[in-house]
Amino acid sequence: MLILVVEDDPFIALHLEDIIVSHVGARVIFGASIGATRGLMSKPFDLAFLDVELPDGTTYGLADELRRRHTPFAFVSGSAPRLVPEPLRSAPFIAKPFSRREIVQTLDNLWSCAARDSGPRDAARRGASIGRSAAREVEYRARGE
Image (cartoon, rainbow, N blue to C red; front, side, top):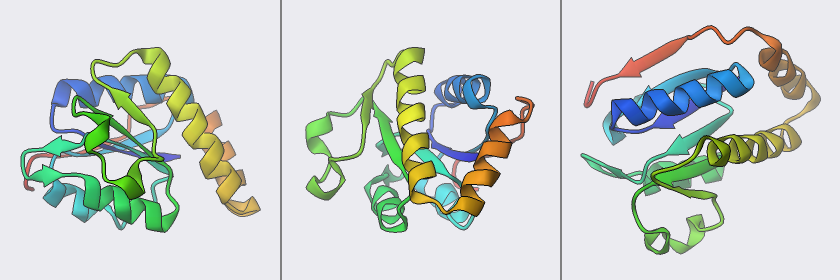
């Protein structure tokens, strides 16, 4: 399983990674800006966690692209949920500061959506990736790179 985390604060990004890796053993890729994340959008990730406010704009465009691709995602942000555009308001919204329980519960819900929306081949691949060790395989893209 491959999970995209879009977060400009490296401490929060690593905290999310720790929760994700310890819970499902997934690989995590990071985008710290809209520009860097656009370069990651070609990767076959299974789900995503998006901060709303980044130094170079909001992630609403990325979220809309994920929605069109049927890739489950959640917002993790200090921004107000009411500011999320109407077409994206059905996505889970986790307010910062967040708890481990909130991330795990949302991860489980997103994972259920991803498994339900995938075919048998994808479901088998995802199931196998959960059983792998929680070794850290991280790609980190610095702002604007």
